[in-house]
Image (cartoon, rainbow, N blue to C red; front, side):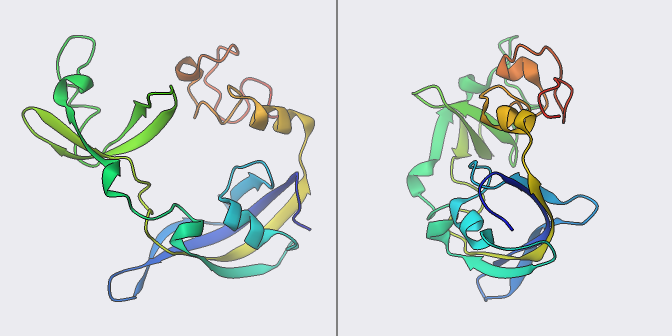
Length: 193
């Protein structure tokens, strides 16, 4: 049964309705490449975890998370114009390979957190970014099936809770200054076993 500190694997399809109410498939996880998370460790939206709580292997699910319980409402103040010079590379030139319309770029907040922003427009002097989640303002319709449920291992839990453990650096330890010295991927630093 899904409860805190259980590792869950599931298939799922995520749908979002367009302006006319017709649902469009946005994401999908198959049995060959399932969605996997540790319940109660903040890996998934809290409302998603609440909807999964108590389900068993083989159970199917079909539920909708309202925007307020998912990624919140779309905020106009999340759209920002920034000087193009903020996106210069080490050679003092605009980084065209990394910063283009549709690209997701990491940005530092004033308190040092890294957030992901989508580039909306690039002009001669400015770059417009959107700090809203791509699904902000959307109700999320999930369908799927629970494949497996098991206890989390000590190594997995340590890695999940570590600010620099596997999974936190998205496969590049150099970016997160982890001491393991490897490009983590799934278990290269040995903490995810």
